[in-house]
Image (cartoon, rainbow, N blue to C red; front, side, top):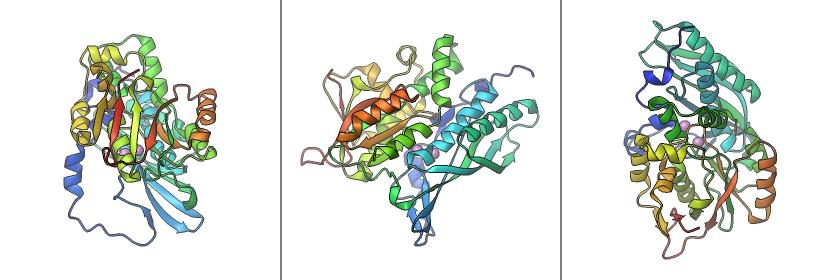
Length: 352
Ligand code: CO
Ligand code: CO
C-alpha cells in the first residue's frame, strides 16, 4: 500500500473539528423536536447520548460520532474513531450492543486505506463485544469515520451528567492533551515515545472505567471530548446544578503536551471552548498559562469524568489504576452552589 499521510488530507482533526457550540445551539433552536413519553434523555441536558425506554428494566442508549483522521496510520485511526464512538455509551454507564459504520472516503484513493480503517474499527468494536451490523458510505473529498452505536442500560442505573452531588469527588480517567498532540503529528514529527503514549490512550476503551464507576456507585459521569475539560465540566455542573472545583496541578497530562503548547500547536477549539465557558469559569491562584491551555484542549477519545461519593473515591481510583486506566487521578470536588458561586460554575484552582 502506498504511504499516504492521512493527517495531511484534513483541515482539522478528530473532535477538534466539532461545530462550535454556539453555532450548533443556533441550528437546533426553534425546531419543535418531535418526542414521546419514552424519551429518558434527549437534547435538553447536553448529555453524552440519547436514552429511550423500552420497559421499566430496559432502555436503549443511542449515540453517534465520526471525524476526520487524527493519525496517519489508517488502522490506528479506525481503532481511535471506534473507541471514541463507543465512549458515550460507557459515559452513561451502559453496555454497547451493536453499531453501524459511518464512512466518507474519496474513492479515487487507494481502497486499502479504507479497508484498514474499517478493520481497526471492527477490532475495537469486537473488544467492546459490540457487533457492527452494516453502515453507510459516501464518496466525498475528505475521509470521515465513526460509528452510530446502540447500547443498553437499566433505566434505574443511568449515570447522567445531571446527577453529580455536592460532596462528591471528581476522577478523570485519561490524561489531557490529545488535541495539542494530534496537531503536533500533523505539523511536526514528535518523538516516538510521545506518539506511542498518545495513541495507546486514544485507542483505550472507556469500558473498564465505566464498569468500575458502576461498581463503586458513581453518582454521575460524562466523557471529556471536543469541548475540553472546561466545556464538559461546565455542561455537567450546569445540568447537576452544582459547582466543580478542579485542582489544575492534579490533572493527568500526556507526555509532550507542554512541549506542544510551547510550540503553539493549539487547536481552534482552544479559543472556541474558552468562549463557550467564559461565563462559568473562575480561576483562582496564579494562573500558569501553559496549564491553562490544557483545560480548553479538545480531547479525542478522552477519558471519563466521574463524580463519585467521597467514601468510594479512593477505592475506585485504586482499582482504575490497577486495571489499566493508569492515568486516572482525583482532580477535584463537587460543591453546592452558594451566593458567591452560582450553579454551573467551574473553579480552576491554580495553587499547588
Ligand atoms: Co460524550
Ligand atoms: Co459526540
